Length: 431
Image (cartoon, rainbow, N blue to C red; front, side, top):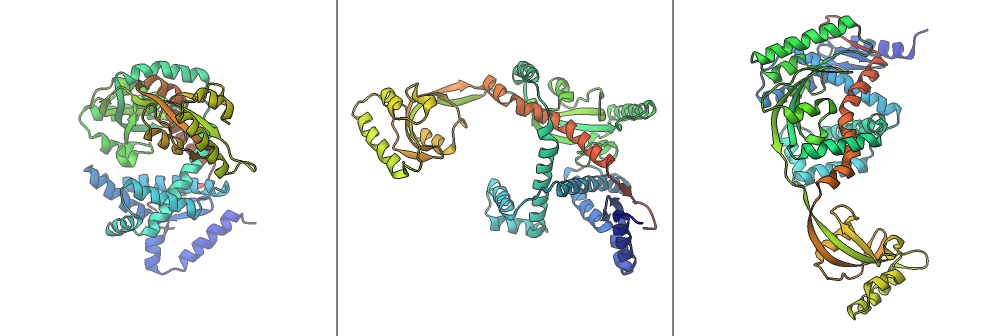
C-alpha cells in the first residue's frame, strides 16, 4: 500500500513525464519537500532576484552551483514554513493584505497607483507583489506564534539587562554587523564539531589575509543572511543577539572578532560601522482630566453636554480637583483630582494625545471623545525629560525577546527541517 506522499509524488512525476521536452527542461524537480515539490522554474525565479541584489551590492558572484545551493536552501526553508502555517490554519485575509500594502505605499510617500506604476516599471507585477506580501505576513505570524511567544524571560534577566544597557547607551547606540555561521547539527559528534571548528579557523585566516567578508559569507556561511553577504543591517545596540553583545560594544570599524561557539555552531562577526549615542530626551506633559463614560443610560450627547456645563463652571473659577473627584468616571485619577501626573508620548490613546498636544500650559480643552468616553482635559505644564532609563525599563522584555529571537528561529527552522522529508536533486540528470 503506497502512502499518501508516495501517491502524490508518483502523480506529479507522471505529469512531468508526459510534458513536452521544453517544459521538462524548465520545470524538472529540484527538491522534494514533504508532499510538495520545488521545480527548476521556481528556483530560477528566485536566483534571478538574488543575483540582481548581489550585483547591486557590488559583490563578486560566486560559482553558479554555490548560488543554486544557497538559494535552494532558502526556498526549501520558506516552503517548510508555509506548510507549517497551513497546518496551523494561519491565513491573511484580503482586508489585512490591503491595509499592509496601503502602509507600504504610505511609508514610501506613494499612492497605491504610484506604487503599482513603480513596481511595473521595475518589471514586477502588482499581483505577484500582493501575493509575496501576503506570504511575508503569514511567515511573520508563524514565527511569532511558534518562536517569539515561546521565548521565556525572567525578571532577573530584565534587571541584568537594564544594568548592562545603561552603560551600553553611553557608548554606542547602533551597530552594523556582518556574520558568518558554520553550523553544527543538534547532537553533533565530536568529529563533526572538530570539522566545523577547523572550517571556521580556515575562514578566519582567509579574512585576516584580506579575503572579502561578503564573498566568503555568500559561499560558506550557513546563516540566514548568507545571500546578503552576511550583512545583518543596522540594529540598536540593545537588539544585538546576546552572543555578539560584547563584540558589538568593543569591535572597531572593520575589525573581526574571535569565533564564538553556540548551540547553532561557530560564528564570526565583523564590525562594519557603529553610531554614538545621544541623550533620549522627550517632551512630557503634566495633565489632568475629567472622564464621562457612555453606556445604555448615558449617550454621547449626554456626556458632551455634562462636560460643557462643567467647563463653564471651571472657566468661572471653580476648583478642577474637587470637580474631578465628584464627576469623573476615571476612578484611578478621580481620587487624585483627575491628575494624570507626567505623561510621555505613546502613554495614552492617539485621540487623547492629539488633544493634549494642542493645548498650552494652563489651557482647558473643549469636550472630546476617545475610545474610553468623553473627556475634559487641562494641561498644567511641560518639561524636557531624559527618558533613557525609563525606556530601558519599559522595553527591556521586548528587547531581550528580540535578542533571543534569532537563535530561537535558527533552532526552530532546524527542528522543522529535521522533522520533515527533504530531498534535493540539484545536479542530477534524471528526475
